Length: 243
Image (cartoon, rainbow, N blue to C red; front, side, top):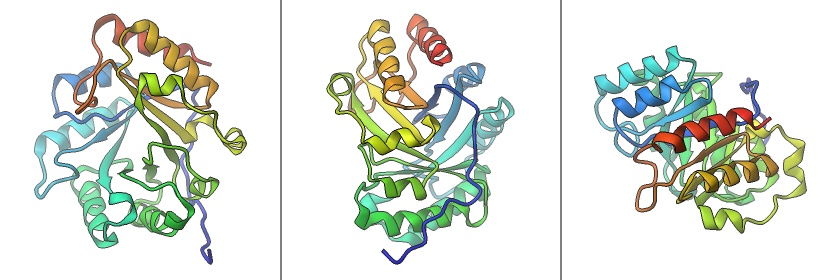
């Protein structure tokens, strides 16, 4: 490809399985709920307006500080339109997240998974780290990727779909096992009850996903709330026990 793809200053985490939440809801009680669940909740994503929006929001500034005080890493949401969004637009949004909210990294959404797109995502990684050398870079193809993607992101979201699809998921490529589980994340929605949630987490352990989030919520936006009651407490306990 004529590209030197290397990960500089990639962060490390000591973990078995932990929760990473696509928290597409505003500051308030749900964020407090996540904060009190640290360290089982280790990563969250802020998404004020399909990105940082055009103006800084004081409530998000305060919320990010509160989460970081609990040891939770906060990533800013930036979409890439499957490698078609101009890098200048991506950079603008990354800069806003860094300058306004002092996030711990960037969550790149709507990502491609083919080798032809690797140069684009190498640029995204460079942009994310330009003013923040230790930034966590997460990408979301929502599907398996080629091994080259391990050089452009710290965490790759290789599954994002419903519970029934997760049960039928094909095994990963053999190369996945060469990397720490913390490099992979799975998001499962529509898991109807606590038994389904526990089964999904055990499958995630089998499939080498160090970051997981399972919810009974469904489309059109399964990431706009958090599980409640015994489902939530059970998920935290199950993840914490998944050594």
